[in-house]
Length: 99
Image 1: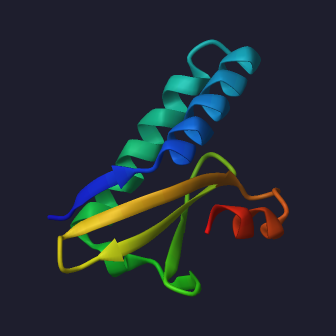
Image 2: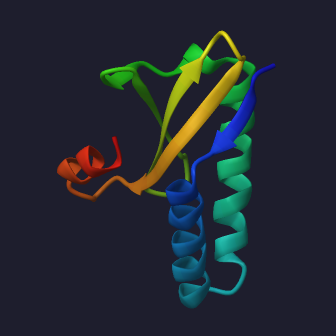
């Protein structure tokens, strides 16, 4: 199994999304994080489960929340690097500022 590394901006994305969901309904932010953990575990077990979307960046959509995990694979070190957790309604041009 690969290990996962979350870049600081990805951690910020998660924190902001969970906080926003908690303002909408108590415990919803926790559900968001739980689903995110499940998807990250799936990626760690099978990093190539998702197709490449930008250059070498793959994306995986969450099931119950409109968010997409943006990650790349470092096969040599058996690591996935999570660069962003974006809402699917965000302008795709925003991704360019993360690369």
